[in-house]
Length: 300
Image (cartoon, rainbow, N blue to C red; front, side, top):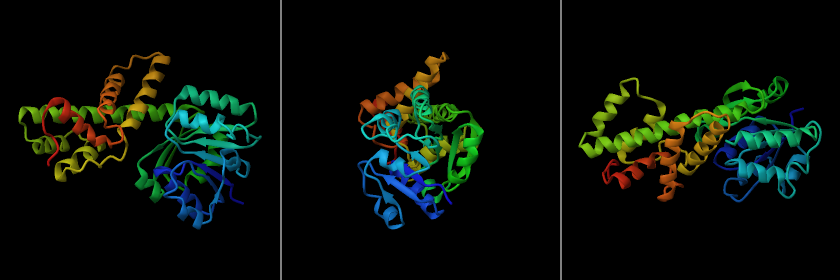
């Protein structure tokens, strides 16, 4: 019999993950937070709705958490009628969020006292790939737990990486996102300097695209922006980038490792959020540079 799956967090990523779990035949119980706009098709496909996080876990063998970050994960675990209240020996809880390793370590220890295994399996790619069942995940888990999870993760993941023991998934995700956000801040700044100097930004794009500096982040940010002024090529919010960079710099400080690049990018994102761009997508860093450098980058 297929494991019974609980799923907490039916957002942009969680909807596709839950949809694919149902399509692969897993009995699914969902706990909806605030947004109910993308729940009805899951219920129509056979999902059961739980009214509390604890209830979601009580009838499940594996519970997935898919929320923004550590404050939300901690509320789900420790809050009223939370997962810790429903903890029982043998339960497997999988955190797919991008979270602070120190917070995850505390949660893991508290669950372990009740016989619950806590696995970190943060995700890469976008809601589009979530709907297609083609996400990437980096799993921090003991080998036996990874083998239990692998077929379940395959319901919504194309690439499943076992990156080490518990905790290593969240560390690797922060390192990965730090590089991505540094690239994004660097690209926006480079275009601002080019625009302010009078450089043809299409020629900048052509040269970068043909050389070693080219990368996926560059193409996602710049291609649609230059073509038609669209700023939606990288579907990740600036506020989430700020949060991930904050987590990264906290981790580096705790190790301790100097994090000059990460902190510089972090401050670029802090500035963007302070200027009101937090809910916009990453390519709106071009708009931030337009405002602060008094130049035009985005074709209008």
